[in-house]
Image (tube, helix red, strand yellow):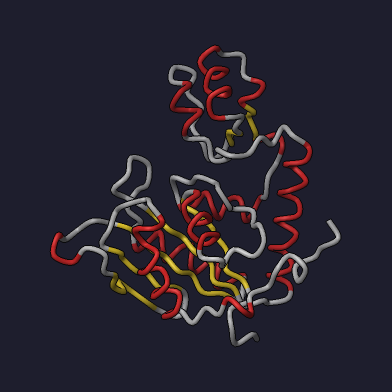
Length: 236
Protein backbone atom coordinates (compact mmCIF):
# COMPACT_ATOMS: atom_id res chain seq x y z
CA UNK A 1 0.00 0.00 0.00
CA UNK A 2 1.13 3.56 -0.74
CA UNK A 3 2.05 5.61 2.30
CA UNK A 4 1.43 8.97 0.61
CA UNK A 5 -1.59 10.04 -1.40
CA UNK A 6 -0.79 9.68 -5.08
CA UNK A 7 -4.09 11.06 -6.38
CA UNK A 8 -6.48 13.79 -5.28
CA UNK A 9 -9.80 13.55 -7.09
CA UNK A 10 -13.15 15.30 -7.02
CA UNK A 11 -16.29 13.20 -6.63
CA UNK A 12 -18.77 16.09 -6.25
CA UNK A 13 -20.96 17.77 -5.33
CA UNK A 14 -20.53 20.54 -7.93
CA UNK A 15 -17.78 21.98 -10.10
CA UNK A 16 -16.27 23.94 -7.19
CA UNK A 17 -14.43 20.88 -5.92
CA UNK A 18 -12.54 20.51 -9.18
CA UNK A 19 -12.02 24.28 -9.47
CA UNK A 20 -10.50 24.55 -5.99
CA UNK A 21 -8.27 21.49 -6.50
CA UNK A 22 -7.06 22.87 -9.82
CA UNK A 23 -6.29 26.30 -8.36
CA UNK A 24 -4.35 24.63 -5.55
CA UNK A 25 -2.30 22.69 -8.09
CA UNK A 26 -3.60 19.35 -6.79
CA UNK A 27 -5.56 18.34 -9.89
CA UNK A 28 -2.97 16.51 -11.96
CA UNK A 29 -5.32 14.77 -14.40
CA UNK A 30 -9.03 14.66 -15.23
CA UNK A 31 -11.45 12.40 -13.41
CA UNK A 32 -14.99 11.36 -14.35
CA UNK A 33 -16.66 13.55 -11.70
CA UNK A 34 -14.96 16.84 -12.52
CA UNK A 35 -17.48 19.66 -13.10
CA UNK A 36 -20.52 17.44 -12.53
CA UNK A 37 -23.52 18.44 -10.42
CA UNK A 38 -25.17 16.06 -7.96
CA UNK A 39 -28.15 16.73 -5.73
CA UNK A 40 -27.83 13.40 -3.93
CA UNK A 41 -24.85 11.37 -2.78
CA UNK A 42 -26.42 8.19 -4.16
CA UNK A 43 -26.10 9.60 -7.69
CA UNK A 44 -22.31 9.45 -7.33
CA UNK A 45 -22.51 5.77 -6.42
CA UNK A 46 -24.92 5.16 -9.30
CA UNK A 47 -22.39 6.45 -11.83
CA UNK A 48 -19.56 4.55 -10.14
CA UNK A 49 -21.59 1.36 -10.46
CA UNK A 50 -23.18 1.88 -13.87
CA UNK A 51 -20.88 4.33 -15.66
CA UNK A 52 -22.50 6.32 -18.49
CA UNK A 53 -25.11 4.49 -20.53
CA UNK A 54 -25.95 6.44 -23.73
CA UNK A 55 -29.58 5.32 -23.42
CA UNK A 56 -29.83 7.25 -20.14
CA UNK A 57 -28.83 10.58 -21.68
CA UNK A 58 -30.85 13.49 -23.00
CA UNK A 59 -28.82 16.05 -24.94
CA UNK A 60 -29.99 19.67 -24.78
CA UNK A 61 -28.46 20.11 -28.22
CA UNK A 62 -31.28 17.91 -29.58
CA UNK A 63 -34.21 19.29 -27.56
CA UNK A 64 -36.67 21.12 -29.80
CA UNK A 65 -37.67 23.78 -27.30
CA UNK A 66 -37.23 27.53 -27.75
CA UNK A 67 -36.32 28.13 -24.11
CA UNK A 68 -33.70 25.38 -24.10
CA UNK A 69 -32.25 26.57 -27.39
CA UNK A 70 -31.81 30.05 -25.93
CA UNK A 71 -30.12 28.56 -22.86
CA UNK A 72 -27.84 26.53 -25.13
CA UNK A 73 -26.73 29.72 -26.86
CA UNK A 74 -26.09 31.47 -23.58
CA UNK A 75 -24.45 28.70 -21.54
CA UNK A 76 -23.62 25.88 -23.96
CA UNK A 77 -24.93 22.38 -24.57
CA UNK A 78 -25.61 20.20 -21.54
CA UNK A 79 -26.46 16.55 -20.92
CA UNK A 80 -29.35 15.44 -18.73
CA UNK A 81 -29.26 12.00 -17.12
CA UNK A 82 -32.64 10.24 -17.05
CA UNK A 83 -31.85 8.23 -13.90
CA UNK A 84 -30.42 10.98 -11.70
CA UNK A 85 -31.96 14.21 -13.03
CA UNK A 86 -35.58 15.31 -13.14
CA UNK A 87 -36.90 16.02 -16.63
CA UNK A 88 -39.84 18.42 -16.31
CA UNK A 89 -41.43 19.49 -19.58
CA UNK A 90 -43.31 22.21 -17.69
CA UNK A 91 -40.12 23.74 -16.34
CA UNK A 92 -37.43 23.32 -18.95
CA UNK A 93 -35.27 26.06 -17.45
CA UNK A 94 -34.98 24.16 -14.17
CA UNK A 95 -34.42 20.92 -16.06
CA UNK A 96 -31.58 22.54 -17.99
CA UNK A 97 -29.91 24.19 -14.99
CA UNK A 98 -29.97 21.06 -12.82
CA UNK A 99 -28.39 18.80 -15.45
CA UNK A 100 -25.63 16.69 -13.90
CA UNK A 101 -23.44 17.11 -16.99
CA UNK A 102 -23.73 20.89 -16.94
CA UNK A 103 -20.42 21.44 -18.72
CA UNK A 104 -20.38 18.44 -21.04
CA UNK A 105 -22.16 17.69 -24.29
CA UNK A 106 -22.09 13.91 -24.42
CA UNK A 107 -23.58 14.03 -27.89
CA UNK A 108 -20.03 14.94 -28.96
CA UNK A 109 -17.84 11.89 -29.67
CA UNK A 110 -14.73 13.63 -28.34
CA UNK A 111 -16.49 14.22 -25.01
CA UNK A 112 -17.55 10.57 -24.90
CA UNK A 113 -13.91 9.55 -25.37
CA UNK A 114 -12.89 11.99 -22.63
CA UNK A 115 -15.13 10.17 -20.15
CA UNK A 116 -13.90 6.78 -21.37
CA UNK A 117 -10.35 7.86 -20.49
CA UNK A 118 -11.47 9.27 -17.13
CA UNK A 119 -13.18 6.03 -16.11
CA UNK A 120 -10.16 4.05 -17.36
CA UNK A 121 -7.97 6.07 -14.98
CA UNK A 122 -10.40 5.34 -12.16
CA UNK A 123 -10.19 1.63 -12.99
CA UNK A 124 -6.38 1.84 -12.82
CA UNK A 125 -6.58 3.58 -9.44
CA UNK A 126 -8.84 0.81 -8.19
CA UNK A 127 -6.94 -2.13 -9.66
CA UNK A 128 -3.49 -0.89 -8.63
CA UNK A 129 -4.73 0.19 -5.18
CA UNK A 130 -3.26 3.65 -5.69
CA UNK A 131 -3.76 5.68 -2.52
CA UNK A 132 -6.30 8.39 -3.27
CA UNK A 133 -7.91 11.27 -1.44
CA UNK A 134 -11.44 11.67 -2.79
CA UNK A 135 -12.85 15.15 -2.20
CA UNK A 136 -16.44 16.33 -1.80
CA UNK A 137 -16.97 20.06 -1.30
CA UNK A 138 -20.39 21.59 -0.64
CA UNK A 139 -21.82 25.09 -0.23
CA UNK A 140 -25.21 24.65 1.49
CA UNK A 141 -25.64 28.43 1.85
CA UNK A 142 -26.19 28.50 -1.92
CA UNK A 143 -29.33 27.75 -3.89
CA UNK A 144 -28.41 24.25 -5.07
CA UNK A 145 -26.30 22.40 -2.50
CA UNK A 146 -28.02 20.52 0.28
CA UNK A 147 -26.50 20.09 3.72
CA UNK A 148 -24.79 16.71 3.69
CA UNK A 149 -26.13 14.41 6.40
CA UNK A 150 -23.85 12.15 8.39
CA UNK A 151 -25.72 9.18 6.91
CA UNK A 152 -24.92 10.39 3.38
CA UNK A 153 -21.26 10.94 4.22
CA UNK A 154 -21.09 7.49 5.80
CA UNK A 155 -22.67 5.87 2.74
CA UNK A 156 -20.34 7.40 0.15
CA UNK A 157 -17.18 7.09 2.26
CA UNK A 158 -17.90 3.45 3.13
CA UNK A 159 -18.57 2.64 -0.52
CA UNK A 160 -15.33 4.27 -1.68
CA UNK A 161 -13.32 2.78 1.18
CA UNK A 162 -14.59 -0.70 0.30
CA UNK A 163 -13.59 -0.32 -3.35
CA UNK A 164 -10.46 1.82 -3.29
CA UNK A 165 -7.32 2.41 -1.23
CA UNK A 166 -8.59 5.79 -0.18
CA UNK A 167 -9.82 8.34 2.30
CA UNK A 168 -12.68 10.79 1.72
CA UNK A 169 -12.33 14.47 2.55
CA UNK A 170 -15.65 16.27 2.94
CA UNK A 171 -15.52 20.04 3.30
CA UNK A 172 -18.68 22.06 3.89
CA UNK A 173 -18.38 25.81 3.39
CA UNK A 174 -21.03 27.23 5.68
CA UNK A 175 -21.39 30.62 7.41
CA UNK A 176 -22.48 29.82 10.94
CA UNK A 177 -20.76 32.30 13.29
CA UNK A 178 -19.82 35.96 12.87
CA UNK A 179 -17.14 35.61 15.53
CA UNK A 180 -15.26 32.79 13.83
CA UNK A 181 -15.28 33.72 10.15
CA UNK A 182 -12.58 32.06 8.02
CA UNK A 183 -11.83 29.37 10.57
CA UNK A 184 -12.23 25.63 10.09
CA UNK A 185 -12.87 22.73 12.39
CA UNK A 186 -13.08 18.95 12.17
CA UNK A 187 -16.72 18.00 12.60
CA UNK A 188 -16.15 14.23 12.47
CA UNK A 189 -13.38 11.83 11.50
CA UNK A 190 -12.74 8.09 11.21
CA UNK A 191 -10.75 5.66 9.07
CA UNK A 192 -13.01 6.28 6.05
CA UNK A 193 -13.54 10.03 6.07
CA UNK A 194 -12.65 13.42 7.48
CA UNK A 195 -15.52 15.90 7.66
CA UNK A 196 -14.48 19.54 7.99
CA UNK A 197 -16.62 22.66 8.27
CA UNK A 198 -15.26 26.02 7.09
CA UNK A 199 -16.99 29.07 8.55
CA UNK A 200 -17.36 30.92 5.27
CA UNK A 201 -20.13 30.24 2.76
CA UNK A 202 -18.48 32.06 -0.15
CA UNK A 203 -17.90 30.23 -3.43
CA UNK A 204 -14.86 32.41 -4.19
CA UNK A 205 -11.62 30.38 -4.08
CA UNK A 206 -9.59 33.33 -2.77
CA UNK A 207 -11.87 33.45 0.29
CA UNK A 208 -10.80 29.89 1.13
CA UNK A 209 -7.23 29.73 -0.14
CA UNK A 210 -5.51 29.91 3.26
CA UNK A 211 -7.91 27.50 4.95
CA UNK A 212 -7.60 24.99 2.12
CA UNK A 213 -3.80 25.17 2.33
CA UNK A 214 -3.98 24.40 6.05
CA UNK A 215 -6.53 21.60 5.56
CA UNK A 216 -4.54 19.79 2.88
CA UNK A 217 -1.41 20.18 4.97
CA UNK A 218 -3.30 18.59 7.86
CA UNK A 219 -4.34 15.77 5.49
CA UNK A 220 -0.62 15.29 4.66
CA UNK A 221 -1.06 15.78 0.92
CA UNK A 222 2.31 16.24 -0.77
CA UNK A 223 1.86 17.82 -4.22
CA UNK A 224 5.33 16.67 -5.29
CA UNK A 225 4.41 12.95 -5.21
CA UNK A 226 1.00 13.18 -6.89
CA UNK A 227 0.59 11.19 -10.10
CA UNK A 228 0.25 13.08 -13.38
CA UNK A 229 -1.24 12.23 -16.79
CA UNK A 230 1.96 10.37 -17.65
CA UNK A 231 1.60 8.13 -14.60
CA UNK A 232 -2.04 7.43 -15.40
CA UNK A 233 -1.70 6.40 -19.05
CA UNK A 234 -4.29 3.85 -20.15
CA UNK A 235 -5.02 1.92 -23.33
CA UNK A 236 -8.30 3.82 -23.89
